[in-house]
Length: 228
Ligand SMILES: Nc1ncnc2c1ncn2[C@@H]1O[C@H](COP(=O)(O)OP(=O)(O)OP(=O)(O)O)[C@@H](O)[C@H]1O
Image (cartoon, rainbow, N blue to C red; front, side, top):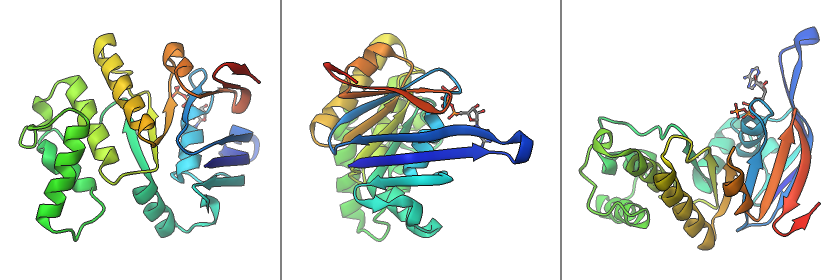
């Protein structure tokens, strides 16, 4: 479950203090798909950073899968993030001069795993995203859609509870974007909670829950088929 209660986050000091989030609250059950929508600069990225502990909220509480993340120290936050969360971004962030295998291997948490075990986990992740047989391909030789599939494989190799996708289709043509969308929803159907930051209303409408952020505040929470 993700339970966000009254979080605020400001940047700067004194007269220059700027609130990127103001008393934001919402609750989502495990396994749901959640869209975070809103104009550029409304606070969407700041919200997912606060939920993942990449940036700590100034006040309020954030429970993710039963863990009060504002109470964790830096090392515990890193461990929590590595074990429970997977991230996918608009810009893919794959290492072009590394193979697909090595891109995933770099983020594999079980660093002391036997190499046969690593290989199995990496092959499974590649197969889940439809990139079987691409282990040895250099990331830079992959198409845009394949790069994003690789980024998704890397995000899911540790079997995260929550997959956080920030504009995952923003750099893709509509056909490839639709395939990536389908892949994300397939992973969601298998039980991974999916949180997507998007400007795409059609994509947002496919999610169980749509949270609209405006000027750092929750403007509206809509559940599929229900208006709040
Ligand atoms: N580290 C920071 N220091 C100062 N201001 C920041 C910082 N991070 C974000 N902000 C400000 O907080 C506000 C919200 O930013 P945020 O990146 O969360 O918006 P967003 O909704 O994700 O925008 P976009 O859709 O353009 O990515 C913006 O006005 C931004 O300039």
